[in-house]
Length: 323
Image (tube, rainbow, N blue to C red):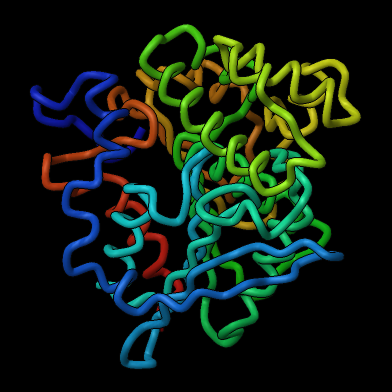
């Protein structure tokens, strides 16, 4: 543990931090990452189309380019993405925010459904964005499921290196998605939130592609676990959810051979990601693991105004590559 994070007592609780992470307080007003955003549609592989928003630094003298990856059922406009994007842009970095397929307002772009195992298309976008300003240092920062993607991107770089990728940050990453899925179901508030968000997303997909999808019976299911099982059995090659979850788990020695410098940050009181799993990770010397006592899931807020502890840690690493 380094630079111990101890939030004020009134926002110290697990769910206070977790809920504040998604609070839009102070994220939109005077946010240069929104003011300078350019919408782009990328074609990373085959006929897949993904949407992103690129916010180059206004003066054309960026210190580097940072790609932000949101969590499951989040989007480019999730509070933690906008909060981090604003901080980075104000400190001289160009920012790229990616929507995965079926996230944000992108359900129309692809007939196929989103699955967390779809690393190829996300990695393809990473390669393309890194090449935007290939003379500048490039970084990836992911949150929750985006943190899982970030770690798998770092692992993919072992065999397919991205020359200007200098550091990967993974905040509150999902390590064992099976555990995390059923952890959500344990907490009525989290279960209700994610069930509602996923159902709304599936409804959009059904409305756009009625000949392909009918989720009406799925909407009647009460847990994320039940919904996941039915969706996989009906619309994927996976008949057993455990087989699917194993495809994108990053546990044990999955990250032992990383060559890209990586920082992993989590909290002991995260209600979704068991902190014990992080102590079982085998990491190379180039990787740093930070486990804080407080922080909830994606939280680490120091104030109600939205100042976040991990921003300082991110900036320390970014500045190492700025000339």
